[in-house]
Length: 182
Image (cartoon, rainbow, N blue to C red; front, top):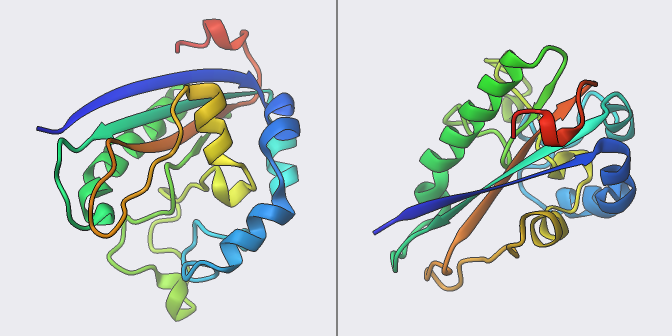
């Protein structure tokens, strides 16, 4: 039986960028991915990652651990509804906090196939949000240090004990993170 567990953390955006963001390192990882330049939420992005990080004061990080309970199969298909639910929750929070920016848990998968692969503009730009990875963040270290769970991966069709989806919300200003409604 599948169960979920939420983890949350907050950190000043400047501190997060200094500790966890390495754009050249993670851009190189992105270049090796088949979604590079073929998905509007993946690099290269319209805005340079350092410019995005510098516009915000705090980062709220949300992790959704999904425990598949012994299931196996296609991890992307299994995780799709959990990823969509977490993204919807983060976007709802973005709407409630003026000037904030939702960071998606992974690449956008709202459309069956991304229009970028055909050289066309995004079909739903109002729904498009970058991920932590697309902005050069080390999500593995973030998960381990700030959420207390390392990332685990499926191997040979066998699911790990849990999957961890990591998204966030960049805040332009406001109260310290411990009072930001976490």
